[in-house]
Image (cartoon, rainbow, N blue to C red; front, side, top):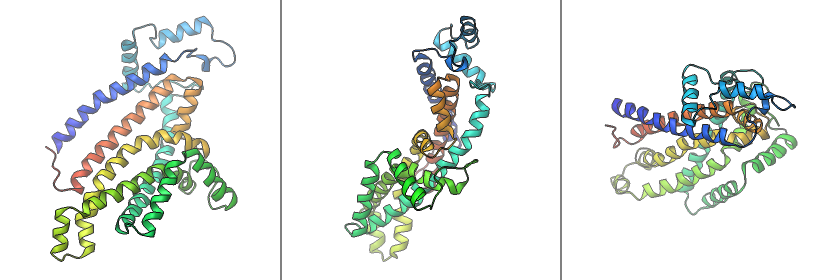
Length: 308
């Protein structure tokens, strides 16, 4: 296990470097004045542009520029925003809010997605199965911002059950509705994936043998069906963390959440390249770490899996 973890950590290095290099190159390749956000309504002076170009080593070849960028990050310098705040301070304030929103969304996927998927598989062909498949298809068909606005109006404005916007500090109770909206699409896929995986596992020889031996149905489902069926589902959810972090841009906009999505959107809009690249690097690092943790959970779910 230790060697496997070390190997995976070493593999994360080229993936992280390749991904962030691509993001860095794309951020600075966009046409236009990259320093416009720092000059307000007036055009930047030539002396300011020359000074910033020299400071960021933009007059050097692209690999050299990226090398300086990585070197600065390794020393804790992630750049500054146009307001003078360091990117690390802005990200450390926004990241916990988006993480809380993502946790709520993941909980919806785990509880509702897997739970309803199991019920649908065990009631295959019944009314509940048909209803869950229909509602999941509806959730897949609608964009996140449409679901967000509809639920915000119906459950927030009309019914008064949830806060229309998220308050300062993003309290957990305010994140229930945005978390459900963020998870809606993935929740539908998790439900369908769980149902299909369970139906496939129910046909396996070892399950039929366990049933033929007279083992209680609940024990067979718990020990031989559900655990094995969750492996592809957890793989999807692990990969979905990155999608949720990226998709949070839309959900945070609808519910006025000051998270990482809002920070990235604002930085991209005014071309704060240092913020875009630095925050994206942190997001990539989180995604790689979560996927490693998901892989390590496989052995807990399926004893047949061993890491050498």
